Image (cartoon, rainbow, N blue to C red; front, side, top):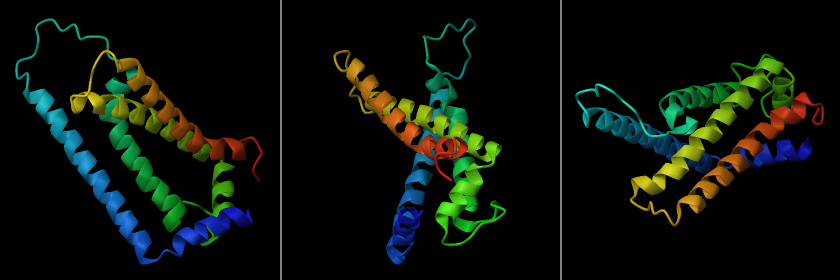
Length: 176
């Protein structure tokens, strides 16, 4: 508990540097959204007439859900900031007691479930994003396809598992 709160306090004590990091992250997210929308619009404009019969190639679930997972993740980020940074969502929010805020939130099954679901969706989104970035930059070659997919899966699993470990640990009673 003390270590967790000390870690959170250390981050908060960065002062102006923390706001610079937040601004950079927000800028990156904004650029990501703009580029994603541009790519989606470009893809739609590339074929103005619809196919009479459309037999698309095999596309995995991650690719099919990108257009939906992005806005859902954006809403989750807003909720997360309101929940843990501002404290507007948490009924017994205690400023500076991050451990309490996390544990008391994730003891509510639907809050923990929402975080788990959102982070699974984030993992799927990250998997497809990392996998497809190679193709977007023209670095797609059959010789590297398996390694590219393995790297994308490993990255998504590490991020997803790390993010859902805390709500699962609280729900399981390992963290109280």
